[in-house]
Image (cartoon, rainbow, N blue to C red):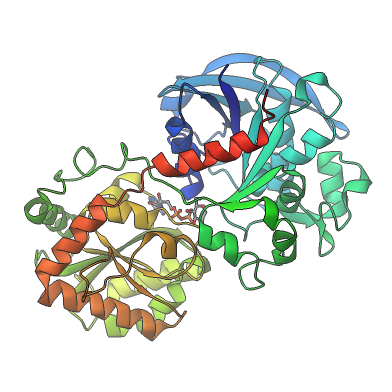
Length: 483
Ligand code: ADP
Ligand code: GLC
């Protein structure tokens, strides 16, 4: 019989996405050995999911679930898409609004509801998983509930849990009385060996403590989070659980992200034709965004959530200097007001040279990955990062800081050996970053053959899910009792 794995997560492409978590949850399930594993996925039925998807969903049933002192409506919708069975938990009160996340005190109750509902629907849809695979703090309570309210029923006995940390920074932390009220968990759970951390209740901690295995999204990040700088105050816990902690680097959906077939870009190209055709994407993008149309100018791209994590203070520090160089910069992102305004400011100051697209657009992101020569990602920390993988796939050379998954996926250029797929720098320092960008500029302008060779290596590098999906399978096997 096929082994059953259930993904529970708060976002998933193509239905709803705020960042790389959605890319992972929406692609990894497709890459398991379909003969050996049956993988299903549960996410919330947010109001903001596009109507085109909602129209395709089928209503299964609904019921009322006890949630502390409340009795809450749980609707179940289902949809099969690209061979994967998806379930959507419906509740108009919790999943209203124009985005998946809002105020933390609301999210705390929302995801307690979601975690419990996800487990509650399983007997109804007649799916008993061997493993529930949880993603980030929003599902941290799933392993806790499995050991708590669901422990006694025979249906749930022997279900194992895996907790994947996509970003340790976000933990779902709130005051204990409110969390107790939202979750209905007994007070005995709120001690420092369980959910309590620094006086508050912490969902991610709950997941890490109660899951059978823990993973994170690159090997380097798995090591980094055992140290105080990256550990976000949970480094002690990460060290204590290190025997159960694994780092598996993310992959990319190579069907969706393929310059040869991508219908969103201006001109398709492959590793054989990029030398002549990739530049057509640059020219069209320059025209579309009001940049000076010049196919020779080095175009540097940024596609990102605009938050501290991504190193934008470094960029702010050297932007005036960088703009004296022969480069153009295009930014696509939303997030903290100060970074949104910072890029708007530079676009105004350096019109024709800097373009700031302060919004979310899947289509424009594809165009940028295809059109740019280089991609800048100087993150302070980066659990894995998918943007640099997309860039590599499109022959757009990443310039990254050596941290987390960036370190594990971008091989720095070595001009003596003619190896490498991008450029990197070590310290979180603006001028060290500028040095790396200027080094890239010198190769781009003065050693075009080497640049193109590097782009070829980048496009040939394999960051599909093939090898990482296998590593997850090995961990699943470790958890499932052998018969
Ligand atoms: P994180 O998950 O920390 O945001 P990742 O690099 O793992 O970082 O994933 C970011 C994902 O979100 C990529 O698929 C990237 O293309 C996408 N993305 C970020 N900002 C935008 C935006 N404004 N418009 C479209 N896609 C975006
Ligand atoms: C998080 C991390 C990012 C990672 C993504 C998917 O959002 O910030 O580095 O790639 O999750 O795992």
